[in-house]
Image 1 (tube, rainbow, N blue to C red):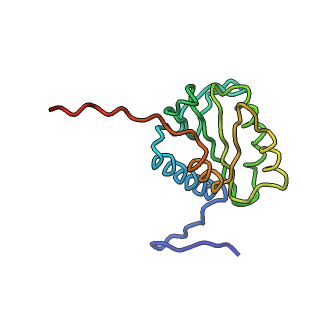
Image 2 (cartoon, rainbow, N blue to C red):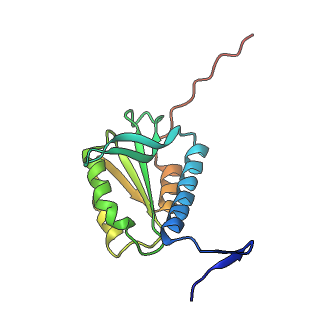
Image 3 (cartoon, rainbow, N blue to C red):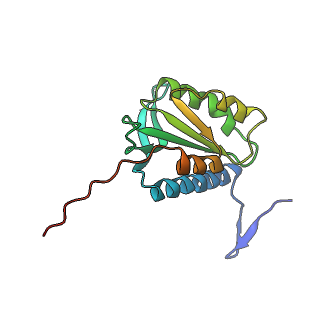
Length: 161
């Protein structure tokens, strides 16, 4: 049985699994953006960070620029997988790029509970001085609230008398 909807006398196919995954992944990225903004971090989304291990331009989901403890910046990658798919199969590529290509440390936020058994354990075991953390979305919120270095204070201009 095909699950189609009718809109304006046209049959509308439901979104593909890939389109749905992109939409839910964007929701996770929006959540991360709101958290970072509320805490005062300056960041760029979809920032071209470096060349990948394959020599192609590589973008990071978030690049934070105002943390004194990370003068070269801090990259944040968001990986959401709500249903079984191939997202977790890309973890080795991501980790290899972080460790060998990224010019700065990185955090990976992994959530959605659709990863294959062992995938989260594997990526968490890769944490080192370049991949400094792997968190669920809830763990990331806690990290930002309590453990992430504070953003640089904005300089206030003197009040004219």
